[in-house]
Image 1 (spheres, rainbow, N blue to C red):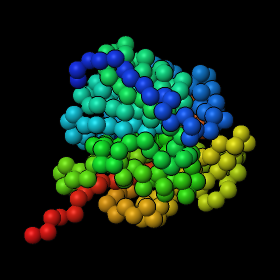
Image 2 (image 1 turned 180 degrees about the horizontal axis):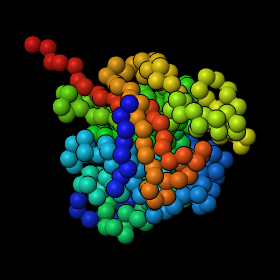
Image 3 (image 1 turned 30 degrees about the vertical axis):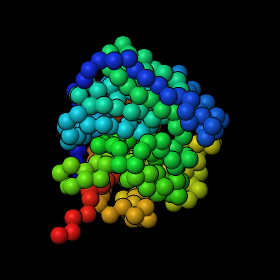
Image 4 (image 1 turned 120 degrees about the vertical axis):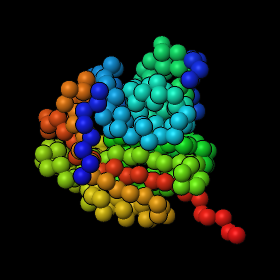
Length: 265
């Protein structure tokens, strides 16, 4: 198990395309996330240790798609390190905050409202150097998650091993016993690893084997799954991410690489 220790471009105005995907978004699903942004999320929180740990592996000047990046904390971190970023999230309130933060820092940040429950990502095929998601894709059932894996693979750039698109995706692990006690107390399991809370929100805790089966069902062969520990102690604004009150999270990390087939000679 890998342990993540505690963490420690030309300027332009932020841009937004909040309305371009509105017709395919169930507005009833938006309200709870906007409420979380208003009541629970610290707008000045620090970047996650996972974000800080994986960024050095990004090719320099990458185009990064940040899936479910909320108020843009990680997006701003990537911008500060010289990358271009498109931020996808369901909450227009979160995207508005992210755009304001980017504008204040004089970075160019494109934002897109999206409901991942539709299992469609509004981005061209073979366009992303990096797809990043931390704790934003474990809100869906097995079928939807499989379809999202397929979409992520579609939008990654195809290339040789040293220059292919790579996805770094982190999910909460069911091996975190204290977190699972909290979840089982507050939600009903509707299918293996998929729980629904009293307010109708889905929480998925997939095993490594389940993730492997979904990746294979999506037609993805070049991947790895790692169990990692993320230490949130002392990280400003991250306390709410551990419902059991602990300062450490057990995560399943999925890394996907879109390598091109060798040329025939």
